[in-house]
Image (cartoon, rainbow, N blue to C red; front, side, top):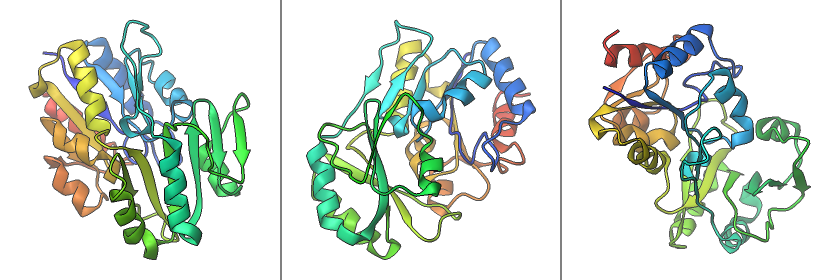
Length: 267
């Protein structure tokens, strides 16, 4: 039997320094050689996940921006997905939130718009030399693939309530224990998630849904953890992430994702 295995990156298969453990690389390469479809399903843009994809020697589709973008760098026959949000929605959110927006960024094609230049944010975004980077505004002027806002935690509920009134755009609250000074809100097209990306990939390869595995640790993993037949939340996840998964596993440092997949595959 062939499984579709969807893996989050940060907090799941890489350590706190963003590095892959040799055992993680070895197992994923082995499972891929056995015919399983291993796909990275991440909130990162492709440019920030490409080195992980290549280190694992994957030839399968990858999902970026939490499901908004899906493509296979090695297969031109794979039908890509690219869901965008009209720029007007982001402008409305920024105008409503006002000073509650501490920082943020948005991506339009290969262009990156950054609200305020700060070292921590620039390191987090990891722009590349071939990109056009616009600093000082989120007036993107065109439909965007992904946008992330760093907001005052006390204002998060109010901002999310406003976004809910807009209809075709939604916000996802990325909760994390490592960032206490601000909340992270991902702005995305309604109905799009890591689960919709995996369903697209599953249909392409004709894999029965009973042979689906997902592992993740964040609130943007909830939909895919609910979606898969076998799913595990990493140790240290929030309660709502645990509730979405069928099982729990160890932390990224303990190679929890790899150990869970080994258990499901009967190794």
